[in-house]
Length: 82
Image (cartoon, rainbow, N blue to C red; front, side):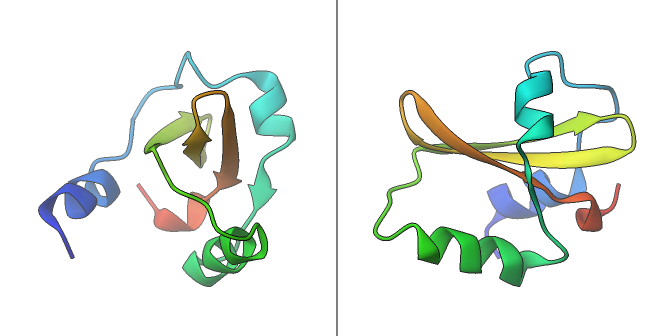
């Protein structure tokens, strides 16, 4: 696992993320594990991930995956812990 990914997973935000919108939270794809995320992304066909961010709202963690400058997917990933 890369050092960047380890840091990403080991240091989730502790406070609510101000840049995570109510619409993103409401539309987040519920996941139980990493396989759910991978399965969803594969179903989208060929995509290029431009960036990703781990965000928090209350007790829940969200992973925002940017695939185009104005397009992203948001996954609820509270199973990551933290």
